[in-house]
Amino acid sequence: MAFANGVVMRSGKSWAWARDDGTVLHGTAASVLEGRRWLRLPVLRAAVAFIEMTAFSLRLHRLNGGRRTTRLLLCLAICILASVALSSAVHALIVNRMLGGVVLQALGILLALAVLQLGMGTEMWRYHGAEHKVVNAYEAGADLYEVPVLMRFSRIHDRCGTNLVVIVFALALLCLPMGTGALGQGLSVIAAS
Image (cartoon, rainbow, N blue to C red; front, side, top):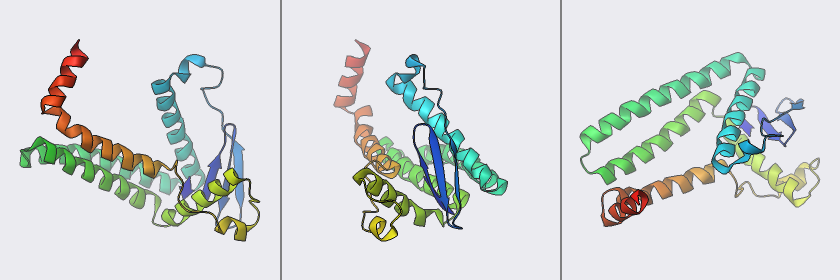
């Protein structure tokens, strides 16, 4: 996870934060998923993991200074209010549901990027690529203490959450026509039976 002043790596039970001032913070990271098999159901597991990751991120923001946490939460609240207002405005201004959906998807991504930029600072972006380089090096078994070795690895990682956003956006665009056309009606009939 990239922060404005370093990179955080988290394993199943611990985390470490390498900061730009040369310090390294570390601690334990317990999960409620451990020992509770019923929480490991696919959709439930994802929801629990998301909540735990959000709480973990906010905890790290507090370690970084309360002002950044407050700013991030304020930006998130404004983003939620803006998305509700934009949804109403787009549906009022754009009659075509498919075009309205595309506009809303694009605006949602822009709002998310704005929250990251305003809430976490522009410095965070420079560490996002560094995070990928370290993960790629770790997965390849490279020496993580040798910076020149780390620099040879790609700043792109296939399991990055940014990739997930692009995939979800593409799937949402593909599903928009299903709501109004014959395929959408056919899927509704199948779902109803």
